[in-house]
Image (cartoon, rainbow, N blue to C red):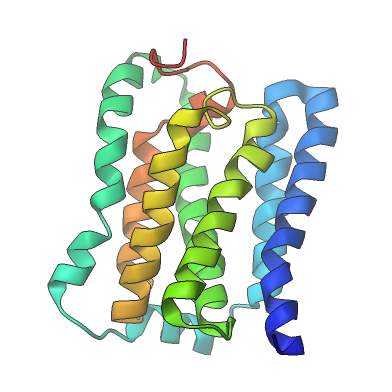
Length: 210
């Protein structure tokens, strides 16, 4: 492995470690509300790594190749969240949590796709399929190791398959289209339908876990 490839490969591990430490420390003082400082630190670290200039953003979101079928594939992970949304819709009533829910979905879908798909898949020096598999595994691990510090749902086994499907699907779509546009849109709907804010606070835990 070339030295540069090694440096890029360990970056997501460092991001996960920083997120884990942030979540663990914050959880000791503010319990499940630790999702707020974790979000801020996590997004900040990813943006610090990517350094998204206007030119980079234009490249990530304007260049497209392939056909519309690849774009449609980006929405496969959304299907996993529909049942969860139906189960948890009864909890959507707090204006504050609704606001946090929408803000989280907008920022998180943008920053995670920039980092996990755009930056890493463009800079890892392995084959395309190896890059996708590697980033998918770490994308999955980032969830129980960071958000799972305080969320019963996210550290549950039921999240394994959906998260792996997200990583593989969005990685494949980006490799085919060279655009993050549809990955970000699909990711936004996933974060909305999985009721992220209520899941973080353990207000909503899917019946299958209880």
